[in-house]
Image (tube, rainbow, N blue to C red; front, side, top):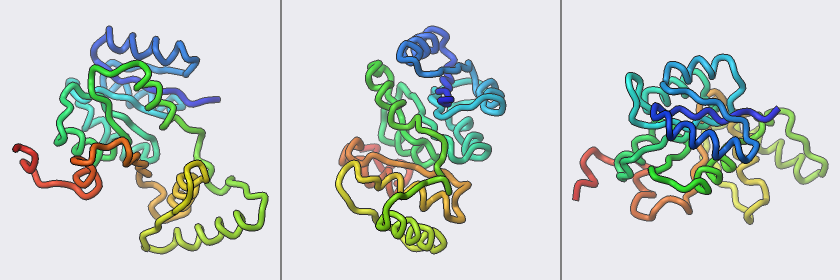
Length: 206
């Protein structure tokens, strides 16, 4: 069964619109009007992606994100914000968000985001290799996973770099920590360094 997308939004009209957009594409959708309700759903329903508003009361999106990272460390979360500043984007990414959406956004943008992050359950040890080369690569990946070295995976688009990256993460001592996949091509050049390496408060004030 495909895991659901959990929409967390305190604006009832927007929450319904987001539900209709994804449900119309036959994507399972659950909704919550606040962070506490979202956590209750996460404890009882299979969820593959959380899409949450940033500005909510009494629990804002960043606080909810922290709870998700603590209780469900491998679950990707996307935050929606009407304040599309570099500081906000960097802040939510550094807190563990998989990505962010700036309101207002097009329905196709939401669909693309969901398609990118709503994945099948973790492969873990169930990853199967049918050829000698891939089997050897998996053995190397398992050995690398037990080290603290930085790993670079090179290859053409579609060759399975992210699959191997996730496999290394799942085999490592950091498996319970979030795996954050970043599409560098989608990040503006002026913001890329801040997202990857951080920034000092007030650095973007002009």
